[in-house]
Length: 204
Image (tube, one colour):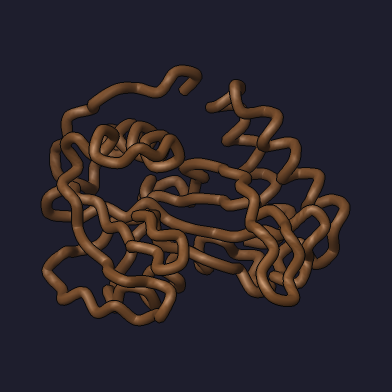
């Protein structure tokens, strides 16, 4: 996936989620205006990051990490560090943070699709000014028949959470939004176990 391929994925995402056009347009402008958009030293207005909503192949449970600095449970992911293939970047980050292997994208047949897009502000820290993370999220599936091995200092814990009720367990719209969208993809994807769709997001 190069920059052009990412823009195509964003166009397809916009067709599925017309209510998010303002957010999508901001990411598209960043890609058009900043040559170093995929690098963490791009601070005006920010840079591209990638992350993943990760579900168990066996149970549909969700893998989250407890961020040490933010004191919040979040999806796994991080900086692209110049990598334009954001699916590869998200998969790499997931493996590095959890120690798990064998991540597979959903949908599994027709090529990658973006699960969610989120722009959030990062406060100034040390020599880094305040900036934005333009986070592109993917849906990954992995076997939970592996031992989680927390790999990075930024994480206090990496843990599986039951899918049922996860939108109520965490008071975080970003997580709830990914959970709702993931239910739709998982229900459509024949490679995974049977799953009940909790709720189809408006504008899907």
